Amino acid sequence: MQRAVLVTGASRGLGLELIRQLGRAERPPRYLFAACRDPEGARGRDLKNFAKCFSNIKIVKMDLDDFDSIQESAEEIQKVLKNNGLNLLINNAGINLGGGLNEITPEIMMKTYTINVIGPMMVTKALLPALLQAAQLSDEPGFSSKKAAVINMSSIMASMELFNIQHGKTYAYRISKAALNMVTKCLANELKPHGILCASVHPGWVRTDMGGEKAPLTKEESVQGILKVLSRLSEQDNGLFLDWRGQLLPW
Image (tube, rainbow, N blue to C red; front, side):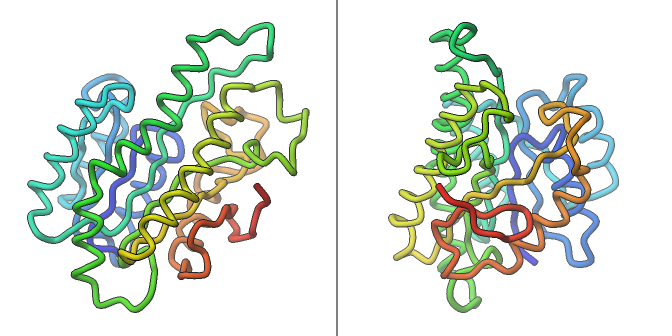
């Protein structure tokens, strides 16, 4: 198991379930950072209640729409980690404002792009020193999520080859997740010489506030699958687009 893990968007949905399952693991991370925009608000209540039972869970206030907030959060995390490094960054936070061509506005596009693309990039940049440190300190061979890895939570709706209109006319969400996949490819190329693995993961269609009640997967099932996939990642998975079962998805 990783010594230090950060999950963004941890106050609800898949982010909260990732924290729950990582926290309850047989060998949990020594440091489990749960980042969310408003931990003191109503949406942070479930996370705070869960974290009370686990001394290794550290709740961090992080707003992906505020780049100063990202840097301040990264500095706070670095202080806790000291010289231990960050093994796994899961860029999970995201929004889906929906809308077809008649509904879309520049404001919706910019807001979605900021949270779903620029935010994960800036989080990764701010925490790169900690990721590099983890890679250098690790005695794990090759590439793995136990050594140092960045996982970007993407969506099958970003795939141009698998485009399906039944997924809805969600211009902003589709475009932003396709851009996030390119971020993954760029990171995988740039960080490979440093021993840091990068991949995009589609969690499946999950019953969350974003996925809706008709979704076939529960949060528990999706996260169980995701964590199994992450545990098996190796150098051959660097820069790939995988689903929660570990199956390769086309761009």
